[in-house]
Image (cartoon, rainbow, N blue to C red; front, side):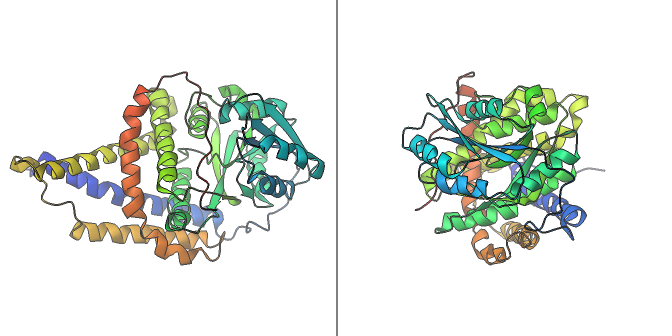
Length: 419
């Protein structure tokens, strides 16, 4: 039997078309299974079941130039419905009046302790310093612009108590600034994309990354892997891989809600997504070979998923470059791209995306009852964020290869939306 042969260009187009469709159905299937297995019929975020015991917890808040937001963050942390906890704010050499505001908050919130670092040494170093000062085995780490739901600590610590091999728990970030189109699309993104992916990844046992903005750790697990690496652009992706490679489990807790601020300008969004893309490439280069070992086979799904996404970005770039070249020079028929405008396959892809978004928003209604109204905004997601994801992945790979290793990754003040 003679099998039909495809031209290289046809192979590229087929991969560019089928990859997002296959992954969408994979995430939908995994997300729905997770929902019916772990979420349906379980207590709602504001009504958790009591813990068998409530050990002390240390909440770490690394800060750099967070003066506008730090007071509301500390107030939300102090309101946690948990019996025994401390709050440690680590001021990482801020150049605004973050230090003064933190010191003023100490008198208002007795649970709060403040550490002042002399210079900006990066979030990873700040978290490590906070861990060394903490009095507890269980650590909750929160970004300085986040507002935690009162029961978030209880939900995450519950996993650490119940599972001896649970090294970390990632919460459920929710976007709270929704004044622009970019902000509203990200509301749907964190539900329809991020939340669904984490559910699906939990089904096959390994997560690509915790959400560093709201997460919890077992100090013993952190100590075993050497804490956070201060030369990684995204410390949360790196620590996730190192914990799981070492045999620790990471769980997803959708009831642990954290309300966060996200970029609402094109420049801020580009810088954020480029940093995320660089973090993915860094862990691929640092840990990819180690993950290929048979003993680490439970990480193969995460590795394959990321590798295919990176490949898809370069395939799309190749198609766009060939189309652009065809506008100015005569290319051979085998390399000629007549159009990149969606045709019937674009309609199929759009319908699958709508199915994915609708499924995820239906699941997320239990955490935010009015979220379904954001369906209109999230349907624009592929136009903006697929292109953004493609270009950041393409730029991140060579940029990461050229970046000097062992160079400390300090942080700058991110775009926190339109105020």
